[in-house]
Image (cartoon, rainbow, N blue to C red):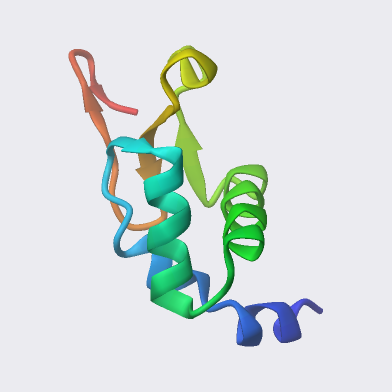
Amino acid sequence: DGSEFYDKYPLDKILWKLKPDVYPIVGLRAMISSIIGVDAQEAMMLLQAMIGLKMIKIDLSYPILETGLIKIISNGHYIGLNANGYY
């Protein structure tokens, strides 16, 4: 049922910190590592899982590979804004 995963990785602690903004990928990895006490590899896996599970929504048109930055537009707790209103 996934409860062991969520017991080991309390993702809500991470989501509260991820307000809509632009973040360096290495900074997100470090933040996740420090919040729940995992190594860099696990932190990247958790970031990928949160994106894949749509716990956080990222702007896929943002130049991630060119800049090393990721733009979070919403998550389970905060909703990003654009010129047309809410995402």
